[in-house]
Length: 171
Length: 158
Image (cartoon, rainbow over all chains, first blue to last red; front, side, top):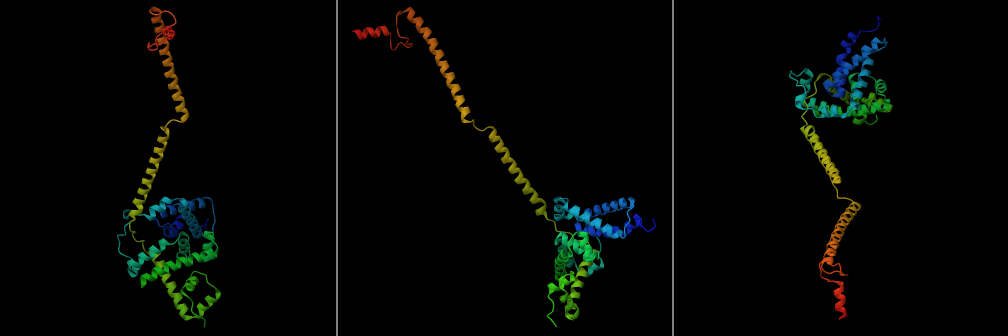
């Protein structure tokens, strides 16, 4: 079909974004990679079955979010492993800092990442979808099965924490 | 002009919440608008960090990683040991009173039956002796302490 994007096109357009999204939601690089692989496996199946969608990007994002939910519900061990990462397990960043990192400073970076990590799962999801993916409140509510009021409430708390972290770093 | 909005209210407005009246004030008040933009700018910075930087290396939580599982394992081992001890203790526990009573009665029966057997064998031997030396109604005293009943009756007659 002519109007439908190919699998390769969708992969090129969304794989990187989805990986980043899953990594932010799961805080685990390896798990994020597994989820992205699973997302594109579902894409392959959906295209084989002849599914026609208005927005494949939004569909991919929803599938990724659902899979992240499933992963989080999967068990305590991944969380335990994530919370107790040893230095050897964390990939070393042997590179020059990029312009953002250089401008912001190591301490501020650490504060922001720590604050983000301390958010609840729901707050993190809402913030990522609303601010990083640019979804509307209604879209986030529909994707997460929440009321718009709940989305705003979670977002308020996330914004408060993250802003405080950014502000402490700036002062 | 009403009072300026609090920081909390501004954050609510950034998050898409807040009342219409507050939003109207935000549009009308330049000071609040500036503060609102500062918050948005801070959040843009946060977004940039999350999108464009790598998470820092976390300090290792050796305490959580090793000591907590070790403590849990030790507690489990102690619990297992206690359970085994209790199980073994029950297996070799002293017998019940009924069993003790039955055992004692067995022992008692055995002892008495031995005594009876001894007595029977003694009767046989004394009868043999009486037949040889003192025929008549002599007492069956195996030790000869009581003497012969016939002799005793003779002594009483005197």
